[in-house]
Image (cartoon, rainbow, N blue to C red; front, side):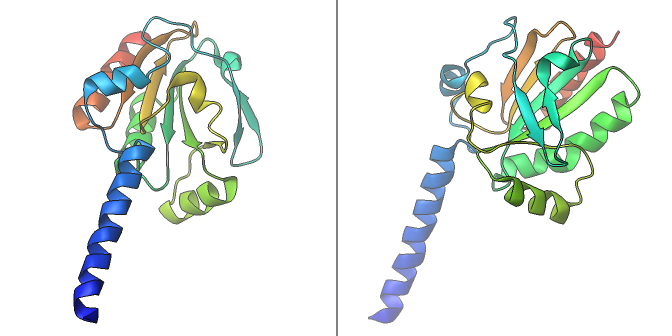
Amino acid sequence: MTPRIFPLAKLYLAAVLLLAATNSGCIRDNDDDIAATTLVGDGEPAPDFTVEMLDGTSTTLSSLRGEVVLLTFWNTWCPECGREMAEVPQELARRFGGRKFLFLPVAREESTETVGAFASTQGYDFPIGVDPDGSIYGLYATRYVPRNILIDPDGTVVASRAGYSPETFAELTALIEQLLR
């Protein structure tokens, strides 16, 4: 009897984990649902905020006027976020280093300790913000990570995209290049 219960328990646990990931917003459902969860669209002013960084400093979005900003909301437990965070920062630094561009990743609804330990384990050497209560994320969206918001030098959202794919990243990179001209 025990051998039959154990496989069922594993199946139940897998279903619970999949449901948790789906409800937490890491898995993309469809574009209509993503649009419904987006609170700030293309062409709208980017809501201002101040975020605490892992190094103890603060960054205020409005103080970055004059720069192109890629604001990225992510989570340590999200596989899609992990793929993005492993590739994007290095590529952005290579392409746009020394120009008026800032990559601003903000971990959503996680503690500074969790994000700091994860960043250390992953070898992240770039500044990371932490939004433990999700209040900053709540200015921009209600669901789905990674969530990328491209902001022009005047503080206007140029593109708001949920999820990560090479195609989405290529689109954002082309827009960044265009804004830096």
